Amino acid sequence: MLATQWLKNARDVMSQIEETQMENIRKAAEVMADSIEAGRWVHTFGCGHATIPVEEMYPRIGGFVGFHPIIELPLTFFTRITGEMGVHQFVFLERVEGYGVEIMKGYNFDPKDTMWLFSHTGINNVNIDVALEAKKRGMKVIAYGSAAAAKGKTSRHSTGKTIFDVADIVVDSCAPIVDASVDLKNHQDKVGPVSTMAFVTCVWMTVTTVAEILADRGVKLFIHPSHNVPGDTTAKQRLEDALTEYKKRVAGV
Image (tube, rainbow, N blue to C red):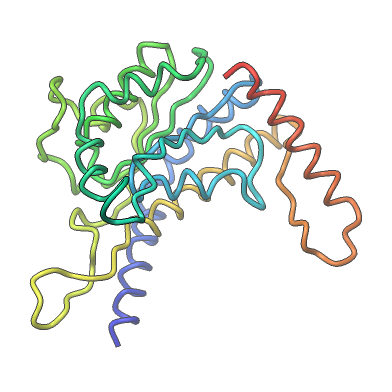
């Protein structure tokens, strides 16, 4: 069954992340922990399916306040496929240089913030714009993507840089550059992409490390609790506490 082939491919990617990326994950987590401890934000951004790790992070059971998702609707909501906000428009928009600059104008940033970017290839203009603008504002930039496999791919940005060139810290998702990983007979294209699984794996390896660092420093985390556990009479209040803290922090963004 091709199901087992995909599962093997996914496990291989996860093993590669563990074997090769732990040091950089720790470095990224230290920077993020500094931002959160300072009462600031780790801003998260991606385009297309690279918004999935952003949406997975917070709000999410087991996530905690400190991660601020920046979701640009035309760059993520293309599930109508054709027509309004379809795939054609998305592919065009993520390659428009300057769009990311305009996105950044919509928020208030601080040099103590961190910008965490997700991009499989790192070559498209919106992500590069956001990375460059974040650096201009004094933020540390952290990029997650298929950095080694994308090496040598030509940037679409006028600077000639990819987000991996701009970033202060890079974590390689270890996904193949073609993303799809399973051969199918009588077809040129493969099926079974693994980049989303790789991104989400990297997210929780990172976020749990951030939590560990902050807990070791004595910082109180406002964790999004499960509110579906029978007998847990305080979950609702813990959720309210987390949302109150989020509201307080996000007021100036």
